[in-house]
Image (cartoon, rainbow, N blue to C red; front, side, top):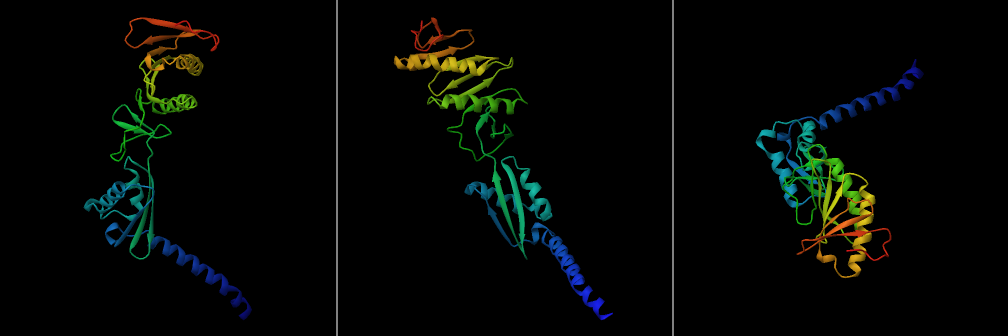
Length: 246
């Protein structure tokens, strides 16, 4: 009988420990924000963003919110990508915030992250963000196309400042060289390669800054419109080393 009891003691102790852990877990996550006396906000965020989180949590309307629901409340803010809330016993919580990272402006009144998700934020410096335009529901497509086109231009020292997907699915962009480029609907990367060969030739002749618009919607060349000129010339592109017929 004694031997059997000794065998049960470790098992009983383990069950008690598991029960205590479960109770502790419930206790740590129980209660409301009003019971918290110390709040820490962490993450790669600005002072203004951190202050915004403090104001949100200290809002009188949220004082009765259960701590377990605070994460959901924070992530409902458009500029917050994700948030974690951890209680530090007995009366403190640590909030860690990951903000959305803007890659571009979207239709003048919102932003896009790298996956094409739309969000709003009062904390973004718009100065160097490209502008992307397109129909509602096409955000991810426009972002993916921007990344592909911009990566190609970046290799030759250019970048896209504005990209537009029109209502008829026509693409066009403006580069930081001040050139408006018409791409059309199909074979976009093939047309961009043709564009780059022609602009390389023009740049060697010191005339790149004189271009106003390039239309790539031709089978074997591009149409070049020059600044302060009414005429448009066709540049054939069978070989980038050939003389361009401008």
